[in-house]
Image (cartoon, rainbow, N blue to C red; front, top):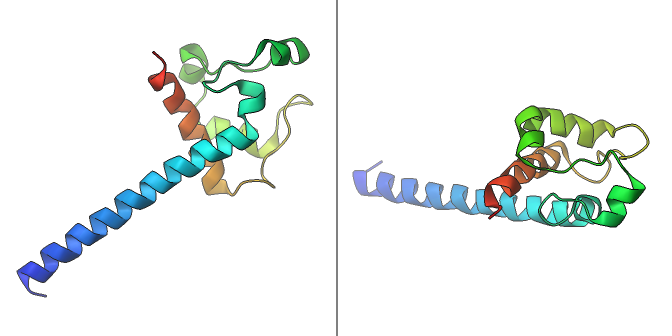
Amino acid sequence: MRPRSMMLFAVFAAAATGSRLGAQAADAKANYDENCRKCHGVRGTPPKTMKEKFPKIATFDAKFLETHSVDSMVKVLTKGKNDDMKSFKEKMSPAELKAVAEYVHELQKAKP
């Protein structure tokens, strides 16, 4: 392959990867909004009604995220937790579950 062809290939490959990562982030937000937001809130703080209904509901604050890795969150999303949180393994693929867990970790960074 000629140097110019190699450079063009690298640019297109990087662009394709970047757009795919952007799409994954958008999908993670969409999946969070569809499946998690009602109970855990837009930015990871459950609404008052959910706190009253489920007193042990997780708030995705810095303390929670320090003690809950992406992998541990994927496990909860996959298996559910007690009777309070159902499993989402039938609604999202393993890759989508991981992307949502990563998105939750990003929510804390985005808080003002």
